[in-house]
Image 1: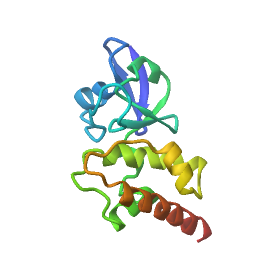
Image 2: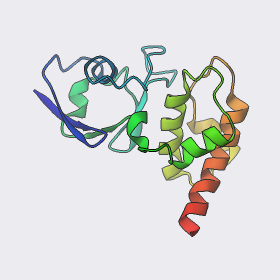
Image 3: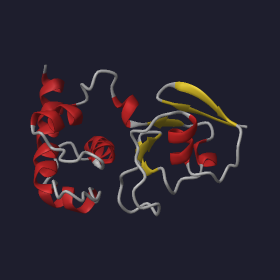
Image 4: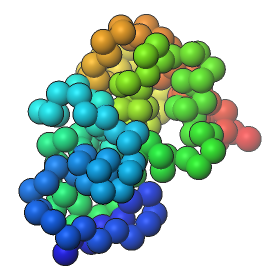
Length: 155
């Protein structure tokens, strides 16, 4: 039995420990925000947070979550008020939207360590792929999310 927490809820998974966490989230728990993209941890469509750190769920065995906190896009904020989600809506970032939950999760984690990002730090750290090519809007939204975070800390 593998025990861990997902979006604040205690979970027990009785299955193979080498099952990718992505499939447990999607197939067992019905949390379909994290998407299957490449299956090798490169595209970022399946990004989740494990104890606050952004990781790809397609390459992470569920056993690695034992005793830890998993946060999915569904648990980032109950009402969509996270600064990254606000910036994404404000700047209308998604085109098809498939990769956007992964982008949002990557950026939310990134801003914790880079609260005032430069284009260079964004290029070096946000490597999620987008088939629609919304990279210009993603970059603008990252900068806007940093502004929203700062504004909320000042008030």
